[in-house]
Length: 113
Length: 115
Image 1 (cartoon, rainbow over the protein chains, first blue to last red):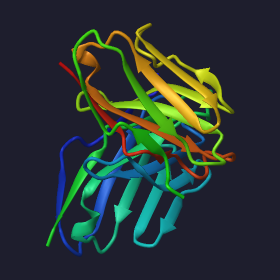
Image 2: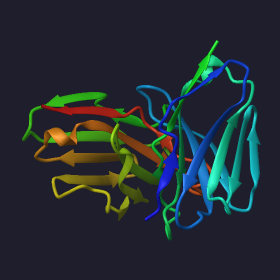
Image 3: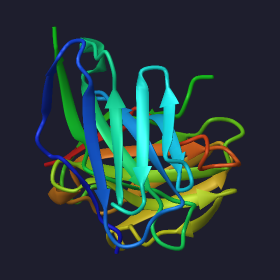
Image 4: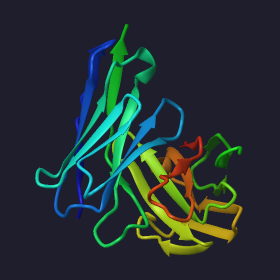
């Protein structure tokens, strides 16, 4: 079955730096991959989708890459701010089913002023 | 739009009792998902509906769990009887036609504690 691996250790960075979070998956390569943000006590919020034929996607200070050879997606936040502190989850569809998503455990980002 | 609305926000119940969680999806969204989140297992998909029809319930842990969607604007997740290991945050999410390109919209969740 498909497995998603995100760094379970929290990422601590200084304000203004670029945060890079990693999502690795096993087995087959999905048609797309999504990234979500989750704040404590809240549900995840959709940020970006990247398709398998897209190498890179940008949205404001966010950049996502998708390397189907490495089976990896990288999520970058440039010029990070304390307000970016949250848990970031990647999600993708399991084999043979694009109607549902499985989620990684998430990586917690802490941006210090 | 008020977003996906879940109730109650918190539920504390005794082992063996029946628990019903409720969800109102965003109007116009035709897919609805129930997830459970714990520290150990993360977000797990329990069941999802498309156009009010259950499509995949393979994530429902056992017969004690059941879900219904009687119409496009309401869904319930019921646990009977509840057990302490059911303690978790339960999220409902919905998505519009043309998903996955628009992502899921999640509710704020119901924190269930079974004592």
